[in-house]
Image (cartoon, rainbow, N blue to C red; front, top):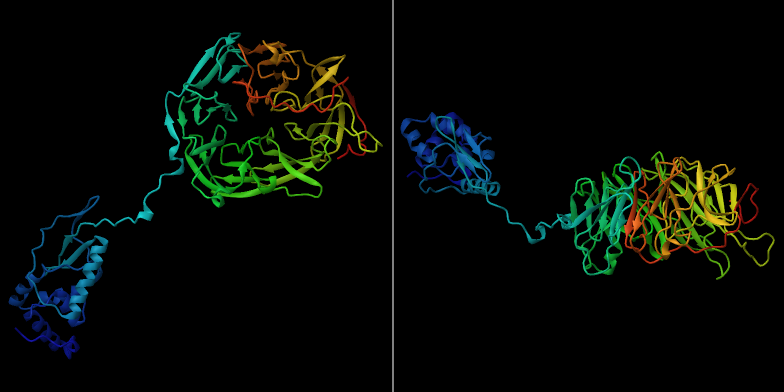
Length: 600
């Protein structure tokens, strides 16, 4: 066998003749194609071309060399395979399988070139190519090698995976108008209009367990029935459930839901931050958030129509809450409002938000509790009505001197109950009766007063006090010695007495304060009384739910946007009556200029 060239003799030293001589020597040594290309300083395809033009015996000997370990496309000028069919885990080649080449000795540089090519090919699980003498390519497949997954990359179940579809966990009932409601727990809806007016449909858990009956709630449009750690879609009849130690429903509209992810294994520092997931109307996760603070149970989340955003009030350290907006499209959250400490004030109290009738924004009331000696004064002396757009922009804030503020649907008027201080008194003293103040919703100036009247009546009775068209306000009054409910028009010019509702069975409905009136959100003629009856002012017609025993739970009788149904939940929970600030004597309307202690 001819003597191999030394490492410094890698390239031909002179002209085409020297190149031919070196090629002949390399062919005689049976050098691989890759080494020939390197030694000649040409590409592998050019080496194939030169070899094909070599004398017949040398070319025939080299054809056997083509079965050597092939090179990847990157080392053969990216020669494309002739015909390849791709499958899921491997590549199938339609050419004949290559023959095994006999062992050959390689130069150091040729060995390194082939080693690098082999490593690259194995890493990618790719296809290697080699050029044959006829100029056609041959494809050799290598099966893909699966990459090992480190333990830290092990897939983790999605946080909302514990929310699972369920069947048979809810059952429903139907009752004819006037029928006795015999069920002990559940959520019930009475039709208020049409041919089925007075008929009742109810939903309850099939197996509530051995503990106390669950608390029933509904989404803002009453599409969903919520009980414990389960939820039911009244329209599609689908149900979901979740482990109560893993997930908690914070709030729900017809188009979205907000869940908190619970994790008892976190340390105290991690517990200061809470994780939330916002879903769409099919309870599919849309975005996840991590926020500081604890949800306020008396301030439900406010969902934007459509469910894209939700506004969530969270209690921060030292009892100063903050309002956050959570955007499911951007997965971003930001603080919208965070009232801080003021001199002489002790605590900030958020109240339930209300949506304006045109749905362009919502009102978020919040109050400051004053630091007063015990026994002096009543409740809060200042409340702020913040108007907030769905982008999280604060459009205005109005200060009113009441504790619990009720805004008219159009936002033009605000009403609240106060016990006014007596004038020129030292030390400070207060009057014997409650007064309802009607205030301009933009300027905060008093419009008129309703002396000896109340707004904070009922057993934790939520809902509005203004009629749906903002034309009047429902208050508790005493007229001609009779305690009942009346409508005062928005100008403060007249009082319309409402009739007494039908009395229910048992002592619960004996007190008129319990049978409090709440107007419907979209019909100024409909009024709910005590969560069990409705009165139509236009027709004078009554519809009632007759309870066998017990009393209603603390739920609003109306959905936030419609009044085709009135809602009642069972069972009753412990009383949470607002304190009676003062007695009610004969009610009257006053138009006076505000004096000190009563102004804005």
